[in-house]
Length: 381
Image (tube, rainbow, N blue to C red; front, side):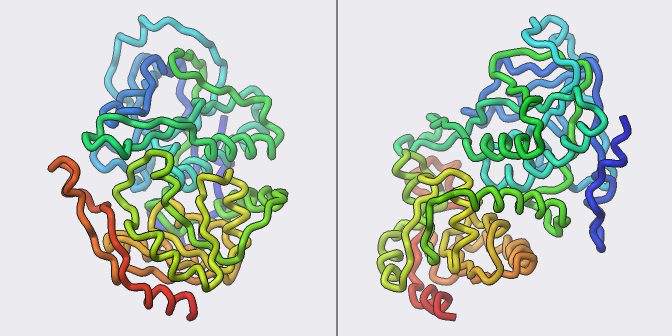
C-alpha cells in the first residue's frame, strides 16, 4: 500500500518539522494489549498500553517522548524504531483478531487541546486509505477516559475519572461524515487484540507546533458546519467560567480565586457567564463561532479560536508563563482574522503551599486577578 499519495497540501513555507510527515507506518503481526490499560495514575502513562510487532514492543508514536512528554514532531525524517524484544507477548491470550486496523491513539487524547490539535487531524488519513482499501478498520480505545485531581485530596493520590465525550463525539462525527462509521472498531479495556496489519499515522502536527496547513483548518470547519445544526442560541459576549470544574470535584492548579468578583465587575457590560461543562462539543463550537467577544482564563479552551468567526475579540487572563503561548495565539488569530488581548498584568500568583513540597515548583498555580481596569479597557478597545 503506497501512502505517499495521501499527503497534506504543502505550505508555501515549510518548516523542517513538517518535512516527510506524509506517511503512515505499516506493521505486521501485531498485538495491542489493553489488559492493564488505565489512565488513573500518572506512573502508568508509559506502561498502560502495550503494542507489539513481531514480539518487539513499540512505544514510538504510541506514547510520547519519555523525556519531553511531547509528540515526535521535531523529527525531520520520522522513523519507527523498534523497541525491546519481549517474550511476554507470546503468552497473551488473544480475545479479538483483526485483519487490518488503522489505530488512532495518543495517550493525551482525553485532553481538549491535544485531541483537537494532535489527534483529530490524524484522522484525515483514514478516508484516504479507505479509497483503495475498504477492509481497514478504524480503531480507537473506548471509552476515552479523562482523569483529574480530587479537590479534596491534597496528596494527589486519588484521581477522578470520567469520559471525554467531546473526543468520542468528534470521532463519531468524522467517521459518519465520511460514511465510514460501519468500519469503526472500539477497542475495549482489558482485552488483547491480534492485528495482521497495523497502520500507525504519523503525528504531523501538535499544539506545540504552529503554521498548520489549510487542510487542518478544513477539518475544523467541518465541525463548525455541524455545530450550525444546533438549535440552542447563545449570547454574543461570553465570560467563560472555570467554577464548573470545582463543582465537579476537580482541582486545577491554574484557576482564578476571585473569578466571581471579576465577573460581577463586567456583568453590567453585557457578558453572559458560561460553564462549558454544561455543553456538548457542538454546542461549545456554536457558542464560540457566534461570539463577538470571549473572556477566559489561559488554558486548553483558548484553542477554541480555531472555531471563531472573523472579528471575534479574545481577552485571555493568564498566568505569566502562559505568555509563551502568545506567538501561537497571535498566529491563530491572524489566520482566523480575530483579535487577541493577552492579559498578564494584575495576575497575583498565590502558590500551592497547601500541597506537598514536590508540588510547589509547578508553574500552574492559583492566582488572583487585580487589574479590572485593564480588562475593561480591552473590552472597550
